[in-house]
Image 1: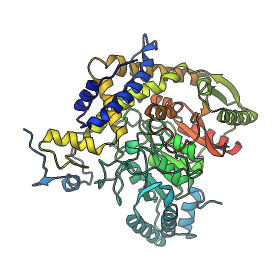
Image 2 (image 1 turned 180 degrees about the vertical axis):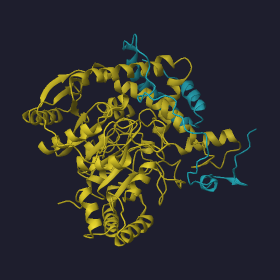
Image 3 (image 1 turned 120 degrees about the vertical axis):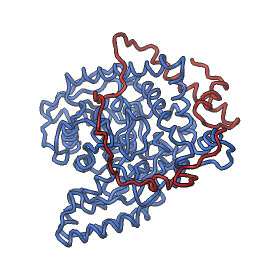
Image 4 (image 1 turned 90 degrees about the vertical axis):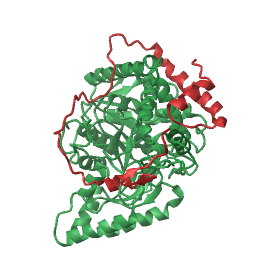
Length: 96
Length: 474
């Protein structure tokens, strides 16, 4: 059974850009351990000679003409859900 | 007699003037308000729906054609982008999102004359089997108020069971149409992967997600599927349809049909009363002249493990777009961009979304990728091959839709793994991309119980035609 530590949960939260409260950590440790423990049954499956499946359609490189298409959606439509904006652009907090 | 006739009849009554689109929409909105206690609906699109109904009635008055779904109201799961109400995916992080465009499925239904009247509740981001993971509220099973409606399309299933509208749209990544349809006693159809565009639908597991209808009958499912399927140039995973006219199902004879009973679905874990009921259904199919034989899909037992590696991996990638900057909830206390990301996501996502994102990040991370993600992709190939072998010998596969019927509200919510196990009989169809349907098979211990049929990829019309026949005889 896989061991998930507090540090693992903190590392995963950091990689996922998710703040988690100190009080939630133990619950996540326990739940992730159970889930990862369950999927470990895959280790026992013999897959010799098989290729991995990424998708089931068999499609390859779907191309479209390199031209402008009007979908009837304006920049204003796309911006109206932005929490903060200025001069027709999305405004974010300082980066550094 | 229910509130609605068949979709075909409803549309024809609108066109012939026997009723109007407006009275249909008004009736649906009234039913929604009368059944609020079941919490199937997050919001109505009443203003836009009434306006569209009037436009359709005017067109009919002028003798213009309005499409095959003229004036038929429907409910959309709240992960479809729809005009007229917010699109929330039942999540706090998307609360208040005002769709800048509509999903292709919605557009196509509108072009055919159908009218979206409301957005249905779901487990937030479609992560769950009960709607208890909705960030807003839990939907109540219409048959037994102490129980869940199943999920994640639980609001859609309850809406159809309560007959709030003639049909509803759902999404199915691991069983999210079929499980709630089975729990609520309606038809739930998961099409072949890649025949319905997912443009404008909140993405969950992109190699697994499909859109499908929840309806009163198999015929209605075919009618809706015909309208929503087809290429739109906006979803590059769409394949060519192998069959035409899902809205005109073949009249089939079960005589000589080769039906495979999936052995692994009848192992321990299956409620004995459900087993008995499915055996009764299989007996009736046999009486109609079909050949019934057991078939083994040995790797189906690992299907759920494959799913709970691949799905969270894809979720962790798809949900990275919710960053608090472009749309959705944004934490105002953050001092810089990094903090804004982590706090917006930390407060905006519910526990299940966080769990899936973290599990997905774990199985994709360096050192674990080969053991989990790559291995799951390999076992997925094995599962697909087993289906292919089975379909060499059988036309259709049959089994229960779920190992249990609707469970009590609160029964599984503190045990995420136990909740995941409800999907054990539905995930394999998503992994293989094949079509699958659940149809009501009567009551078991006073609760609705479904029977599941599966067919080879791109044989949707065949599957629906067989299902219609089975629906007739059980």
